[in-house]
Image (cartoon, one colour):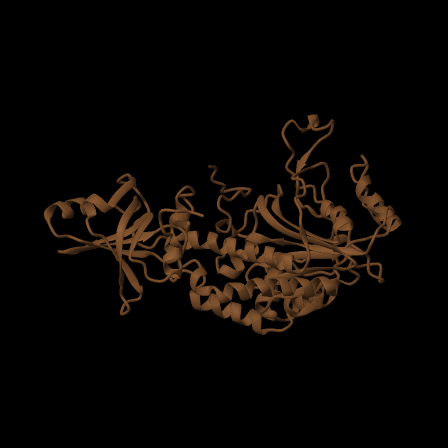
Length: 463
């Protein structure tokens, strides 16, 4: 329990107070002849707090002139004054600025975040300061809300939160895009890497706990330099037993995301700032998106084969895709995913049953022998944000597939295959890219803004 001062969020949530102590940063100052107004923020809310400072004599005028945008200040014994006719239902009135306003942290004359609106491209050049902007600060609070809703949903569904390792000796996805730990040959006598996914360890844990999940960082050394790729990002990954059909996975995923969206919608006035940079969706667009996602009982679901048919008709008869011709057997590209979700369905869409060679070795084969029981969830403007599958639980079939792909020559995955020999159970799960989901729901089009300090192939600003 914090004592001694009120946060701005708590003041808006509480009833009237007599006198208030509050700390924060000056967002703007407006000085009139006999009164000055300070807009104060403290990072706990999208809202600022208006502080009225009467200017009764010259000494008070001079003291207010020392206040600057960006300064950290402490305000003591400010009087609560109702203002029902204004947008803010109350303001705080300072009795004696000389005594009641203390500067805790000054700013230089070059402090860059002034009252005017700043573009996201400008804010990205200030990685140490950008989160003080109302928009990016709100984005981090929005992300926190989304993650808290995840935790509540999984607790309600009897999942156990676990903490898989970040340093591993194997490539879960088989793509080879690994960060090798420097000097890792000394890591228990073998090479070690930063994890690309917690899935393999989650499978081991699910066979003990039935249902488990993790919210943890992942690392991929891919060279993609786009607004939807990061080298360090966070994954929500879940794994549970007795899954036999990919539709069970898509149904659970939709319920999870709708729970998050409804919670965001119910708290929309607190989560979404009213001033949105031009590079992002407007408030009305964001709210409308949430409403549409909630009112659609079941998001569309098609097979990969059906998706290729739709894409080829578009490519051949209407407008070709500029970079990649859709072909059965090849992975869907970003332009295909965005078109399917954004233009064709105008909705999130599940694509299931991809060709086995497009996906990872651990996915359960369908009866046709050509496809696997998997899904991707595609959303407008972003493409794929969730991927999952039923896992192969038969030891012989898993080892045969690993041999076909010429995997596990050094035996690093022997433990994983051996799970199928010791009380194996049907199981499955998914991984969700947190930054992609947050960006999609928040209306921001660059996932580098959805993580406090981004790490990407190029354009990375180190701190």
